[in-house]
Amino acid sequence: MPLLWLVLIVLALGVVGYGLGRHKAMTSADGDVRHLHSLPVYYGTNVSLFVVVPALLVMVAWLIVQPIVINNSVAADIPASAIPESSTLGLVMSDVRRVADGLDLAVTQGALTSAEASGLQAGVSDVRAILADVGVALGSDVSATTLSAAQEYRAMASTANLAMTALVLGLAIAGFVYAYGRTNKDFRARNVVEKAIRAILIVAASIAILTTVGIVLSLVFNTIEFFKLYPAADFFFGTTWSPSFGGGSELGVLPLLWGTLYISVIALAVAVPIGLFAAIYLSEYAGPKARGIAKPLIEVLAGIPTIVYGLFALLTVGPLLVNVFGSGGALGVDWMSGASSVTTAGLVMGIMLIPFVSSLSDDIINAVPQSMRDGSLGLGATKSETVKQVVLPAALPGIVGAVLLAASRAIGETMIVVLGAGAAARLSMNPLEAMTTVTAKIVSQLTGDADFASPEALVAFALGMTLFVMTLGLNVLALVIVRKYREQYE
Image (tube, rainbow, N blue to C red; front, side, top):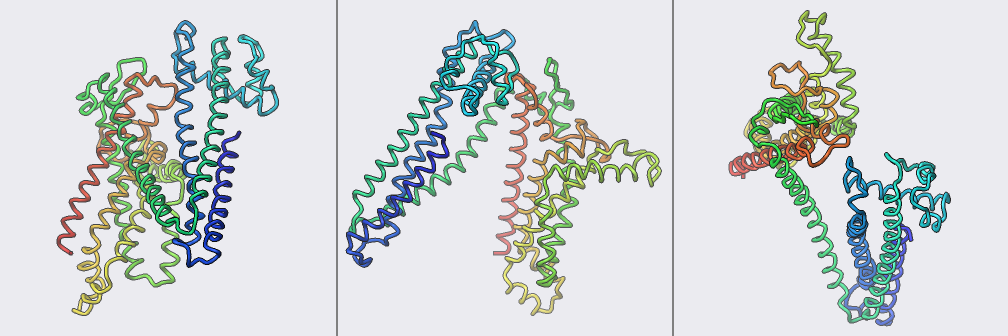
């Protein structure tokens, strides 16, 4: 049974359970709500929760575990002699899964019957053609071992899906029978539903926390593997970035960090003053009509895809800077040889960050109590003096948070850097030269058929861990600043 149908059936059973549970509770109270311990909605919700939640949880867990179990089982049956010298078991299993998916797709589209897909003989010349007809492209011919393993993979997946369908529907029905059977006017349905809702909220919060933990652990473990293959001192203090998948790589991170920080500083130098001044105008000076027009227009900048900003940097801002600072330009100097430069990326990234600073700062400034403004004006201060001496100091912790959020966004930006800053990893003070950042090199090191056992691929995780530590340091700094000023104003 298709997964979507299974989910819809479980949800439909939940809706039916809600109606029947509510009806039974009202019937046991002779139709008088006053005789019920809880409101009728709680009785229906109780039955619905017992139908839907256990079934869907088991289904999600099954979908996570099933591919791992089947993959390991099929991989164990592939003899080592069947793996080519230029390949690995992981690559062979990738072909096995693609062939299995292709056979399923061929059956779905009517190109093969299920019996034909299971009975194809290894080495049949038209297997590759059949898969090509349904849009499955393979990098190599289908070997006897691959086809046999794919048929085994497909059979095990089909059996597992059938078992999952039976188990999920069985749990849904069992949940309905259990919850419906104990539904009566004296049942404390409200208590059960509230406990269930609290458990769901705890699970949701735990998923967010565990996701963060999982991301960090994946970075940590792969970074450790990288430092087993490449010296940490050369990575952190090396001044040359020259990866080579053939060996002899120099993977010094300093040029990448310098490019990242240089571009981020220029971006913040553009975004912070403009965004902060815009926020002050919108919150303190603009009328309702002007605010209603200006604020949405500023926030439109946040909705523009970063690839569009990158193209804007490459096709508009870069050539404009070349016309000013390049040879034959307006200034008559030869400081800029190409459109890609730190300044190009920094200016465009700063424009992108304006709504982050402006919107958050505007909300923070509006949250300052009006009584503080009234007290300042009552003492004879002007509007500008009130903003400078009262409002901004009171809102400073939130403004610092907005600036650091923009800084984190700048450090993690990729597309604007790739198109606007270039790909040269160098240590230079010239803002009109092309440089690159950590994020751009993470993408380049993981692009293509990279061997994840090589330091040239694992270095991407070390770069990611470096960015994580930098961002964490920014957050700690923000907490220190916020606490200092909150002690002063609270």
